[in-house]
Length: 378
Image (cartoon, rainbow, N blue to C red; front, side, top):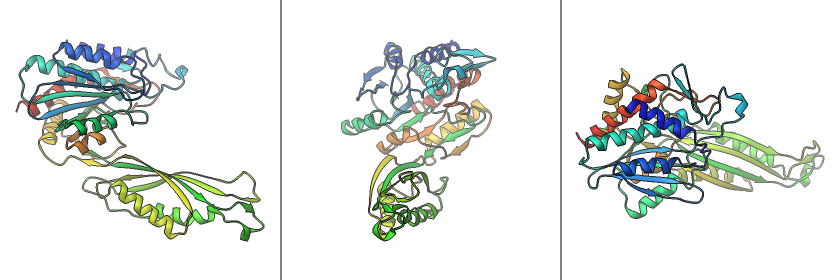
């Protein structure tokens, strides 16, 4: 019943076209199910974003399962072998937008929670589900805002398991134990427009910006941190000029991003970058966007339990990694929670014909349930 239940719920969620920041009724469906199982469900809506907080239990440590119900746009539907919002199983594989990222994990969370509280109605501690419809979009009114609400009301979270598709080739071959921080900048270097034949009457922002940008790009920020790679700055876009070859432009815009490890905080990197810009004598404005600080879960009960469960379910010890991009766990970790990520294979996420193995999907509820039991019952 669990195997068929998670497949049916995943299909039901995929059929709801919840393109970010839409939820399309996914959270209401889940809230009805978890309310019937004895969970206290709270809707936290900020702007156009739906967030669901469902809790079972009263006292003791809190384990949170974290996920999102929004998906990225499907792209040209004619490129798909089947309708992206009409789930279809072919050769043991379930196709549909969100199958892997991450409606399959969300469905597995729900089934695992229902099974856990049915078997252990008087369990110690609290087990909870936190969902948002703003993970694939701006990530402003989703878990970021929920975390701020939790901080103000003193909500306790000890452990967090995110269901992002973290596996590389086979289910459970990778355990995410941290993520780098992300910091983005929009830099405008101000010059004076003029004729190229009279450079003394102008100030070329391209010529001024190039040495500073080259220094930032070439800098070795650090040598890494434990399992984290070195901090990296990448310039992603540069725009300047009027389109004419005889006009010195009056402004240059550059976009760059830093992916950074726990050696740094975002405000430190901002200061370091602006020191370089000032030292090169630039007249500039800069707009920073702090996408999230890095987080890292050191060796302890949560990592040990996850390693043991994955070893039993997946036939071997997982690689324990801090690679990849970002996830909403970056907003939960600062609340004092230890955070890990376990989910299905990520090979097809955000692609045409996104899919998940039905066999993997059917194993996920048992995996998540055993992890809950090890943290709250052992």
